[in-house]
Length: 131
Image 1 (cartoon, rainbow, N blue to C red):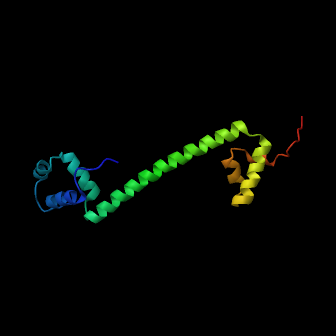
Image 2: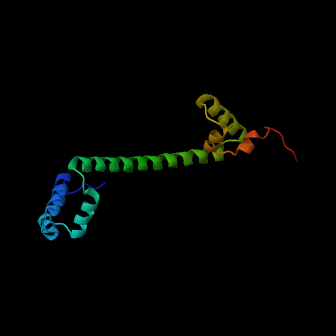
Image 3: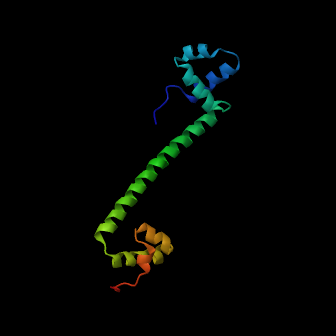
């Protein structure tokens, strides 16, 4: 996230100045910002103290970090499922489902979804061929 040229204190002071009667145009000229920027600040920080604004900014940064982390984990999951799909036999996947269920105490549905194997294939008797 890009760092703002203006601190939260400057932003809240500008908003308070406009609420006390100073014209928005004067405030914008003083800070060197456009009126659109001022109104977006007002929308975002109106009624908040500088501490609350700082908290909001921290939470937004945390959300962005967690979003990036989630994307990375989803990519990792897709890569591992691709490896499972292409390099393991169905019997090995069944053994892996059993391992997940016994080790991590998860259900059949979740362990089959993680290993990208359908539950019907998991429950189908191993080694039987009804042709």
